[in-house]
Length: 256
Length: 144
Image (cartoon, rainbow over all chains, first blue to last red; front, side, top):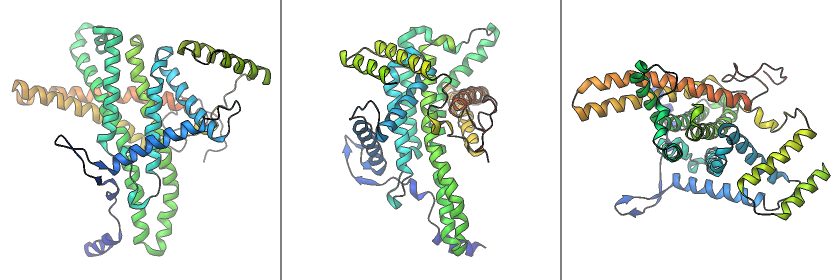
């Protein structure tokens, strides 16, 4: 069994190989390794692709939109409704940020689904990338909260209607819950992307090993790929929804 | 539709630069007119509404897991930090670990409720594992 497995191992590509960071060119910035990697390349690509698409597709400004313009408008309205529903009129100002965040993550996830062989890469399958995004949201929301409510923002940690003797327990729990937001936000996106991609690669590995019976895993991979595209969309959406929910907490504290 | 369109486009031509609240007012205006023309129009974004119908339990596990783990990890780290600071080795770690578990569970409940609501709206038609409780059951031919 063990030797058989060893022989098969050679046929199967390592499912974790796709997450490898490769340096495209080296760059040292004040003693810090700021090399341009494939991860950075895909993030730049996502910015370029999404900006180019959104700018070019609405350039016509037609009253009756064409196909491309419809996609952009659909995307815009979709995020807009979501932001308006969860933050109300006060959140209107922050819509551009949430829209950018959503489109950025969505395009990164979708670019990661492109079958580019060894060049294929999904930055959101690295927790440091998702954590950076989540930390940006966390710091931003906290700053907005203190800016709007001053020191009163701390009341967020002491929900009304809780008897005073429960406070020593409730307050630490609320604080932990608040601090854990960026962690859960980043872990959710990262775990979903990484697990899905690994699963697909493992199935892909089976195809080579099983010879003619490889048709089985291929058939299985079709729905899984569809599911993965769905997850790529849904996770970008979930990230944006939770961001606007957190923003709502900071803007309209009484809702909490 | 055409006369309404004309009104809107001429309006737009008169003042191309508008403040956000004006914009909001105008958009609400337009929305009201659209609603008047097509009452009970639930068919916006037909494709997006079906997103998530095939959501699997593995996705739900990750959803719940990340919240729970985040609470426990943050609680544990705070406890460990306090222990290092005050040199009271296991005391705060134990206390905050337990608080972290509770906070994690609270996270799970909270974000489950949020996502259930949002995804329930997103998939107002069709079955959805995550949002079953809040989406009213509707007949859908595309159920498998």
